[in-house]
Length: 498
Ligand SMILES: Nc1ncnc2c1ncn2[C@@H]1O[C@H](COP(=O)(O)OP(=O)(O)O)[C@@H](O)[C@H]1O
Ligand SMILES: O=P(O)(O)OC[C@H](O)CO
Image 1 (cartoon, rainbow, N blue to C red):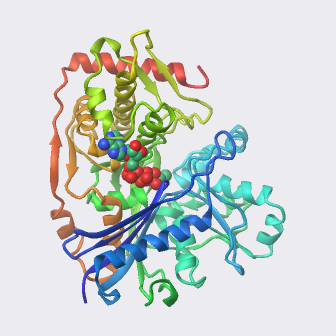
Image 2: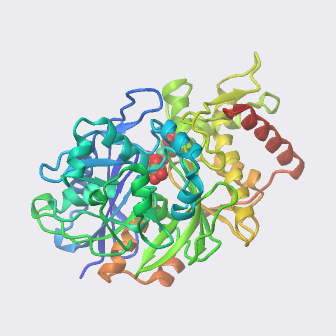
């Protein structure tokens, strides 16, 4: 059998499909953006139908571009924006509300109430997460409480819940499979990551009928066959993982202590912590990295909500650049004495602050401040935020996350050499950029190929990871200390409780 894998990467701003050959090379790529809906301040929604139609369109386009017969495709792997919540009617297949996106802050009050009632310690002990609107559980509760008739339909067993993987699997299989994988389940606030099961107490706390929840499978498992109408022939779906976990796999971070950081819309750093979950003392998330053959591997995760989207703000909001790549030359031209600090808390602050009410701020403005200073501040904010995460990992993890490991990076923003050099400088540690930057899709492809038995095992896959470029730290320690102090002060002044 040919080892071609179709990987679906359903992301926050676009859907992508990539065909990989058995040498893990991307041979055909198709991508489609879809509309973001911002109905109120802090609210972010997607049409569930857009997620479905754009996914099918890019799959068909990639298959056509490749010129390969469908019979060459051994399996389909799915990776997805995590936490985004879809509720649909099992009989009609229609969503009852737009998908509520991970960035959406509408349930901040509910989270604050649950925290005030003293539930956070129990929630964290079981899920590894915090009571923050980021996760699916309170979004699902919001839909049941705010869409007319939803709660009664849910109680009657007519409504189903899913993260985006589950929604796509349901549609791809013609409504025959209602399933998710352990990494996606781990982001819902309803899944006990220690016991690997949906948690009755958490469902009761949030008022979620358990009949709505999907079956939870390994990340490399049988998720059913696609309906013949979708691609013209049925294809087996054999791999599923949330996008940051898929990137961890694609970066071959299989050993405890290995760290990857992905720079797309946001930035998500994960450190593999091995077979037992680590309870964070520094407000990181404890989560599932992957589950293979019933064996769970855990990770600590730092989630930053704004990374590349700060660059999009320079382009679409301030209009000081016309494309993202221009930031590099602009930042390099900024004068040392005009340094600005941008704290991009556009949708609150994620790890390690978890402050949903904070909003962005910029410090150091003078009459001389201009576009170059804004561009440098936006790119540098990504480095500083990563430093905060790595420091928290360092404190949580008994190994030395900063010096004993190297950061493997991927995602759209890693195209910027300037940003990667600043990152290495501010971390004081090497940053490795691999040759294949589509690591998220590659991870999903490997999970599917593993189940199909058409690609090499974990060790061989890991040994074929290839470096494109290593960024070595070059900044003087005193400069670094001074810059970091300025950043810490800027964050202190931005936080909502300040
Ligand atoms: N050369 C560049 N310099 C800085 N930022 C970039 C560059 N190229 C892309 N980006 C940023 O990377 C992001 C896109 O990365 P991608 O991995 O496709 O994101 P996502 O999967 O979240 O949609 C955008 O926010 C864009 O602004
Ligand atoms: O779609 P991305 O790449 O921005 O990733 C989103 C994350 O999964 C949110 O947790």
